[in-house]
Each structure stands twice: as structure tokens, then as C-alpha cells.
Image: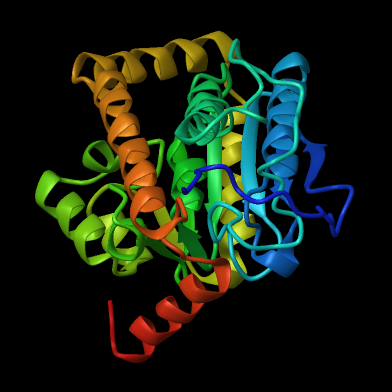
Length: 300
């Protein structure tokens, strides 16, 4: 008999500061700080991100927020294989959902991902202050969710965007399913079905990215954009965010995301029943090896 509950293992965090926080000239810089693991998102980091966004919202001197990542890559996605993978750990929750730990079968992942993935991303999208994602290197799977919840995206010319979970795991995209809103439908299907890397320049041409600059100019270009936001009235920017987000909701973004979240968890359950593993046996190492192989074969 299989179970969707991951095996309990010893959790070893490589840092007590998975997220760094600094305020400069009215801008809060929220920086993911797991460079050793390409800023893979465990729950430790997710809750630290939530704390940082809350801190920025509560500070009246902060007018804008930048989300960044230390090291070579913005984010390699959800943590599916580091010593700090903390799927089986209990955290103080931000939403009115129960603890996922100890729940049987598919209920465990379904409950956890309502909180740390879908729920958290929706919280951050609705932050009252304008947000900018500063993306370098890889922005893969769960990394897309972090970039997409931001109002603006500035990318370096070496950045790429990718969601290979359909190709690798048979799962229809990450939990915060914004693909068909960030991209034209046929391009979204290509992005998901093939799972190839999308270079920053193509993402810019499709309207998913606001600006592409050389890597050495990324921080300065992001700071310049943030400074323009910091000079504006907070209420006007909040109302502008709400106006555009409301249009997306009228187009069905939230209801579409709810529907795909359930498809996502049906796929997890199917993987568990057929392979004994909710990810279809994919690990961080195997996913990285697949990505390297696809790149070396001339993908993208």
C-alpha cells in the first residue's frame, strides 16, 4: 500500500537566515538566501518570506518592495531534495487551514500546499505596496510563482523561465497556476508541454517581463525602477494594483487557479498510486540532471 505522506527524515538547515531584509531609500529589499541550493523554497524560507512582506507592509517608510535571490540563480523552485526539505515539519500557519502533519494519504500534501504555495502566493500578490522581482539565472517552477506574484519583473540577460513539472512528473504546472494569464494560451501550452527554457528576451517580447538588462546592470536597473515607485503616493499605487488585479479576476484568474490546483493534486495522487511517490520519483538531483541534459541537447 502506498501513501502520499513523505518519509520523515532529519531536517538540517544550512542557515538560520533563509531570507535577508534591508530597507534603503524607501525600498524594502527582500532577498532569498539559500545560494548553496539555488534558493530552493522550503517552508523555512516560505514563512520567512511571509514575515518579510508583512514587515514591509507594516513599515510606513517603505513605499516599494524588491524580491531578489542571492547567488547565481533567482530560484530553482520548490525544495524537493535538500537536507533542509521540511515537508514533514509543523509551522505556525498564516491561513485558516489545519496542520498538514499527520494527515493521511493525499490530504497531507493538499493541506500543506493550500497554505505554503497557493495561499502564500495569493497573499503576496495582494500586498498593498508595489513589488518588483529581480530575476537572474534560473527561475524554475516554484520560482515562477514568486516572480509572477510581483507587479513588475526585471530580468538579467542570462535569466530563463521554465516549468518542467508536466514533462517530468505528469503534473499540470505549479500550484499558483498563472501560466495562461502570463502567456498567450498556445505559448502557455508549449511552455508546459515541452518544459523548455524560455530566455528572458522571449519572455520580454511576450509581455511577461518588463525589462531585460545585462547581468552587471541588474541591481542598478531594479533600484532605479524601485526609486520611481518610492517617490509616489502609496494609496494611488495600491489602488492601481487593485484595479489591474480586479481585471484579472474578472477574466477568471482565481477560479481557474482553484480548478488547476485540484488537477495538480489529482496528479500527485496518481503518481503516488502508480509509483509510490507523489512526485513520480523525481528528486532535486534527477531534475537538475534532466535540465542539464536538455540544455546540452540544444534546447531553447
